[in-house]
Length: 384
Image 1: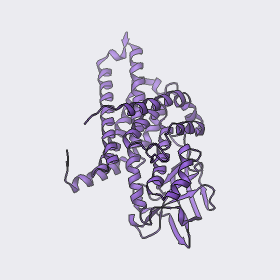
Image 2: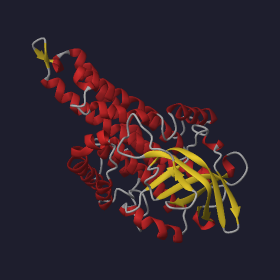
Image 3: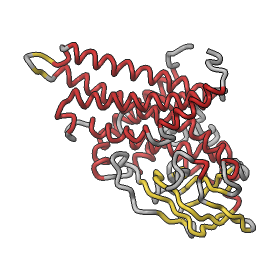
Image 4: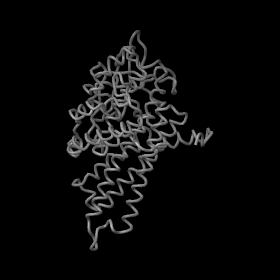
């Protein structure tokens, strides 16, 4: 129950914060405005180990999920969109690391860890969003190959990534018929839709990923046939914590901006920070930020330790934190008045970026489904 970061964790935090402030923050507005995927800066992040934070230390850094949330909070305080892409790259790389063979790990991880190669995670389909187990992209065995047909929707890195970790159907309907495979860029039959025009997350490309008689070797399968849904869900436990941490970073940056602004902005002859209504609003924002951070870090420890309630804690942290952090950013915008609505200030960018965190990695409505199922199954509360 020691809530203080240890010396190593503070070092990781300081390193991520310095990189975010020195490299990401000065360019974040431009990346957003021009829809720039910052490959050079991503590779600089990889030099610090941020491409494989919780990938095993023979290829990556080998840190826990707690350290990863600390890093992602710091990176997102500069640019939630870019931090979120790094999170997705970590998740896809971790799936190869955890479930892949030694040969697969040696083949793909070295270039993923330097971000010479970028990766994408492909689960969502046009007809299978929240109901992920209903996915229809098929992989039919043909000798030593699989032939893939189908499509994936809203894929971060779509059209740019080098490695696509894809969930496909090799068996019957339902979760047990899903298998995980790797599809490499340039594979015949792999194509992409137009780049999506998004509200936020503009520093990362997003498109549909299309498979038309796309032939890949069976050697590209991660795990066994039927393991895909398990791999996907375990990946999402960590992904939900990472995206919640990205919300923390964005909300913290906006709270800090609001604190400075309300001290400087004068109306009716005094700083608006002197008004009790403003003080109460700032107090609530800070309290909710702290509560979210505690939930994220508790969930991260549970996932790292393989706790029996890890999935529930990750869902709770994602649901609560992404909701309250969006509200914090929205309140910060309100405190800025009309200035919060223009691009001279960064808050509108954070607002646009954080909105999608309530949707991806499982919508917050699905988080409630997960939580309610687990507490009704019981016993709850257990070990508390």
